[in-house]
Length: 440
Image (cartoon, rainbow, N blue to C red):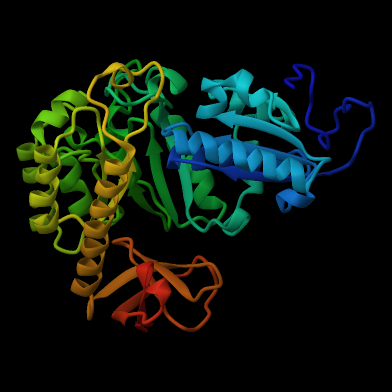
């Protein structure tokens, strides 16, 4: 049930039974995009500042489930996770937030052990209130290694003014809302002071950053401000809509040295007819020119993309355009999404729904192509030397161009290194990592 008077225990506030525990064991489970990941990191900081201690969900007093609703599968995953937590830990108090919790609050509130449903517009303020103290206080409790994270993801913008036909996110995140540039610069300074060396900039519509501010600003203004910052920090730009990845942005990434050669540019479909039906404001020709230009300027860059299969009305001829374009493209990896009706979207009311079996077949075909693109990129990097950052126990490195490299000996987490790519790993893990050696 939803309990409007509920306060998180362990923060010096009375609980519902008026006991005053000194600490609370918490767990945060996150589904979905980098924006959700950034929100969860902020929530963890606030819980730690309130005296919380991170633990596994089966042992936690409080479990925060930050949900996604981009597909029906994402909704189902959140429901299954909440039911599993309640089954394994009957005493757990579950607070649900995120896009699915926002879109279907009553449905989520009815799930077992859910004591509070917090909408996207309320979630950061809700958890900040549990902590008390000024803005930014929670960051003092976050450092590399918390919740297994070495890099820091910061949400610079949320919401979206675009109306892609398939997307429910404008309804769950609202209109575009950007954090003021000066506030972001100050927060990123605090993140750097906490020891983070790599920061990912995330947003629901990242390329629209600053348009809603007064005076207005832009993503390029933000990137230039970060480029001028001192300290040992480098930056990744998260997913950008193709029309927002301007020549000036590419030039800055190519020339700065502070921004990683790593782009994620959702194409969604190679058929211009499908792009128009999806309400995507570009053509394949535009997209092709963009990614070809990035590859020419940055030969080692990682360039990922999202693809949707089975959008209403997608014919065999439409799907074949994906097969014609993708294998010879400069893309290095694909995220493939089967189309899923989202009630309230334009696409949910369209005729010509594609049979589920056909969607699965088409999805498998694009995933096969995606695996070949990733393998080709890894092979192309063999023998190269790339800068990177150690993760986990120090035996794994993420390079500037987003390769995962096993180096076979342990260093401290969060150390800057240079690695020579030697070969693919001959193990099932080779789909994720390749082998390399440290360059002294």
